[in-house]
Image (cartoon, rainbow, N blue to C red; front, side, top):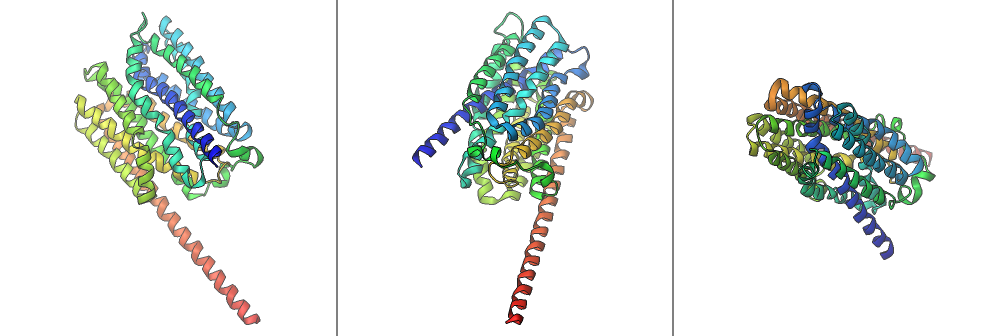
Amino acid sequence: MMNKDSRFRSLLARLVLAQACYFMIVSIDLTLTGLVGMSLAPAPVLTTLPLSLIVVVGTACSFLAGHAAARFGYRPVMVAGALTAVMGGALSAVAVATQSFALFCIGTAITGGYRAVGGFLRFVASEYAPAARRERALALVMYGGVIAAALGPFAAVASSRAAFIPYLGSCLLIVALGVVAVALAMTMPAAAAGGVELREPAIRVRERAGHLPFLRAVVVLAGSGLVMTLVMAAGPLANAHAGHSSQLGASMIQWHLVGMFAPSVVSAQLLKRTGMSATIALGCMVMAGGCAFGVLSDAGWVMVLALALVGVGWNLLFVAGSALLLQSYPQGRGARLQGFADGATAAISASGSFAAAGLLHGVGWGGVNLIAFAATAAVLAASGWLAVRHKRMAASDAAAAMQAGTEAAESLAVSH
């Protein structure tokens, strides 16, 4: 038992480091991709196209990665994904050096392949954790994001000025982080919990098409991802349009990332103590509060506060949605469902990322946050409706089972 616990702790530490590399790359993308796009794009509406391509390609690859992990195991899929960060970062560096917007779009699109496998890290922890500690293990891995929050945005700004061409150093930093991610991915388990996923078929998505907890998980994860991505993509651009400094823009992303990851274990404990519906409601209220601050002002400190609160709300919803997803499959057989949920989340988030620049140009920072507020309310309403339906169906099934048991007992009594 001690040896097994020791191996799990070692795996958990490596997963946290891998998650830190993943979100370091994500934070660099969030901090600077829009700004690079602004400097290279031939038209303002195309400013966030490179960032959107990261999300779009990540979406497509998420569905493929889920099927690949179910067939081959997590390790080769994560190695392949990390290699895309190396290749994409290298191409982006060439694009920045040659001032090529088209090549930069290709480089960021390839980097999107890494987005598809980063989400698996939390699920690897849940697959190898003791059954009673799956949610906590999932939340602990997310602390890699705190490391990224502390270092990522300012590393992005510092590296952007480190080379003789602006932003070249940031692309090379992505390459270096990708190399570390490849090395860590090669140490991951070859398959899900003890090879279960390779011995028994993964649960197919169509088998869970009418499963209300699974549908609710997708709604919560995808809806919160949409709001978070929309506000986060618009934030650095709104910061620049408002005349604030790049340091303030980095602080904005930093506190947003702190909000996204620092409360993870607290969110897991809150989920355990108060229940799923209360955690989702609280997450939506915190996220809506951040959007409300964004509606009120584009002052620097208000923008930082707005993104931080949206991050905290997203964390609560992400932990709750991931826990709902864990309830949708037996341990070790969820790669296809994981890939679908991450892919659906990425697809819907992509629309927020791509729309951010156009909406910001059309309705301003306040208007973007008003739309995000309405979307948050829709997530809360949809989640509540699915929860009520599930409770009614459970009560109906329990009543039917009780009735069947009563009839069987009566039939047995008559026969005697």
